[in-house]
Amino acid sequence: MTFIKTVFLFTWLFLFSGFTQAENIKHGNWEMTFKVSIKGLPMELPTQTHTSEQCLTKENEIPKSDDNKDCNFKMLERTDSKYSWEMKCKESGMSGKGEMNFKGETMQGYFNAKGSMQGMNMEMNSEITGKYLGKCK
Image 1 (tube, rainbow, N blue to C red):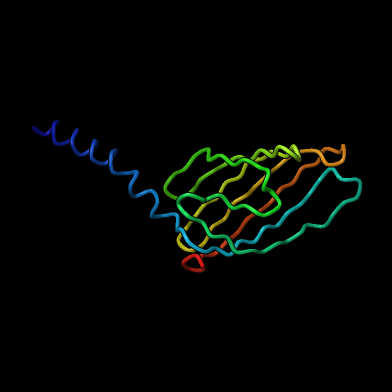
Image 2 (cartoon, helix red, strand yellow; image 1 turned 90 degrees about the vertical axis):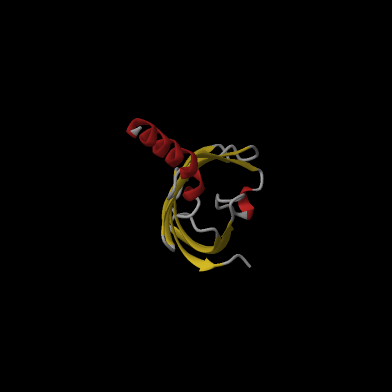
């Protein structure tokens, strides 16, 4: 009888663990700061910092901007507190991968991309930090 109870417990935990995953990643309005460095251009650019608000929902968890409308995004992995994705852009030829780690009302992550611009190979590395602001507007 103990064996059956143990099997039942593990089965229950396995089946219902997916329902608890979404609770550690808060959906809603996030203020995200991107620190971006670009390598491979003829002149060195200083690190750029950009802050924006992003509405992260269950259907749209990957942060995006108007600059990457021609890009396709694909979720690679999702756990209870982090997820990773990849991006591939048709027009610019850029591709990259990113990851977000959530802890309560804060998050940290990165996004790294490579591609070419006007015949020059370039690399873009971004550090991402964020704080939860509340429900989406």
